[in-house]
Amino acid sequence: MPTTEEVNLWIAENVLDSEAWEKKPLKQPLAVKQAERNLVRWYPTAVLTVEIVALQSIWEMQGLDPALKFQKHGVKSVDDHGEGVTYNGTRDVVAPDVRDLLGKTVSEIAEEEAEEGDTDLQYGGCLI
Image (cartoon, rainbow, N blue to C red):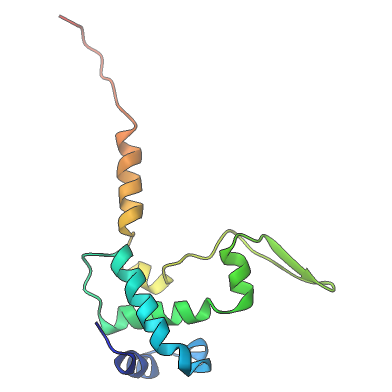
């Protein structure tokens, strides 16, 4: 598993929008651990490279934004003295870049397979 230092270096060299990561340096080791724990659960057969863990770690840190916490809990809109925010659905737990690299999670694949199994096709014939 990548270390916090490796993730930090990769982010510094490869990510333009790293504000969420840099804003709370004391939370970085926890974000890396949380990203690794989640990625192992969602993609048990994937090799967790520094890039993948770094991208998910940033996503975890961005999730600390209070506005995103509302979205995570399914809040549709927030209004504060005339200023409002409306959300479309909930925020994906998997970072978009990670999803682009690794595809669907194990649970999403299992869910699709279960749905496919529910459609028993009948092709006619006769009983003998």
